[in-house]
Length: 316
Image (cartoon, rainbow, N blue to C red; front, side, top):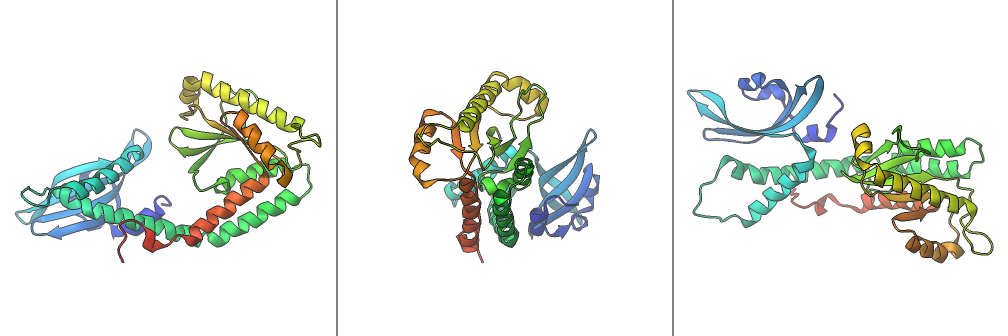
């Protein structure tokens, strides 16, 4: 099982560790972590693999067992399966801890779990940062490979650049979380791909040749850039008009995306011209390939500079 590599570092107890009753939950307990085991209560968070129809589904579950007649029996359970609300849960728990009265109230099982979950989030962030730092040598190698690819002269280079950036979309910047090739049958003149910032927020990426000019000697917009902007405007209009049918056919919730055209190389004397044109073209940004390289290098720099001790809630 390759899923949840970082999570399994945190939930480091084998699934068979927990009370036998878990074997009848309708799924496989992958791993878990005991939050506390005191008096008559055993509380844990577990990762479960179950099935919905023919598809595998993973859930995080909070369990509370109470010891009765020498046997732990399930008394409380909560499933966490929709990633869209995990952040809300963690934020609510954090605020709950900060604002709850300290005395004169009954403490429930989940109140006690809250602090453990916040600490586990810090541990998860620590494990994620360590994993990112371990990837730095590979990321730096990828940046050098991309620089060499841009310098090559080849009729196939445009397709190679597209494949390279699709595979390593992190090069566009650390804010992006996933990439999708546009395969919708209704799209005419398909864009290169979509990159997701968060659910419902996408940028359309359109790649042009590094050799293309942005402006002429007379400081007017070059034809290649004009055509790219017109093409991007058509894409954005199409997504706006066909939002529901696109979502139905692809499952992607793409509403009012931003357009990013990657074209040409940077020239210092064209910076102000480029800024002026970006102001005119609402929701369309124009990047050179040097801008993309800068973003990739900044991503690596940020990972290098970030310290584990800076993680909120982390304790040594």
